[in-house]
Length: 135
Image (cartoon, rainbow, N blue to C red; front, side, top):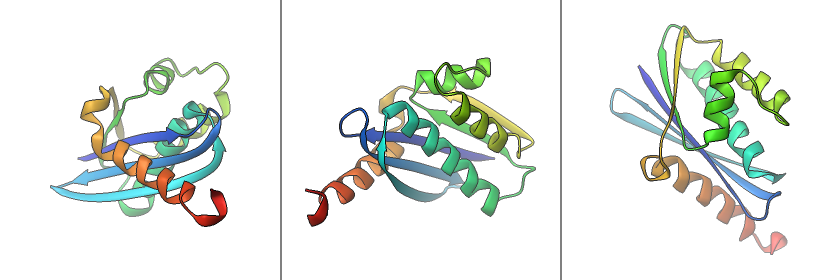
């Protein structure tokens, strides 16, 4: 079983966006972060999830069960309903990524239970914003 936690942090909306992905398997953690130069927070939430599942596909068996945690109600509701007004392309890409695995359970969690991914997203954002050519 793999646990995937994802989050996004945006400065401005839209604006520079950090992505955080935390993967936990057998007590081992893999911390991942990425950056989008310009995205809305919702776009960032989808992008973090898509990147997280791309990492899982590359590094783990598709027979694994994935417990996917997000603090984005829009994202968790969209996956459950298989519909996201204004984010159809992002949702379709995410659902295709999720279909690579035998079982995926999506769970909305409060922000306080998603601190690992949240901190990674903020780190990615701050690292980019604090580069001399981006100030």
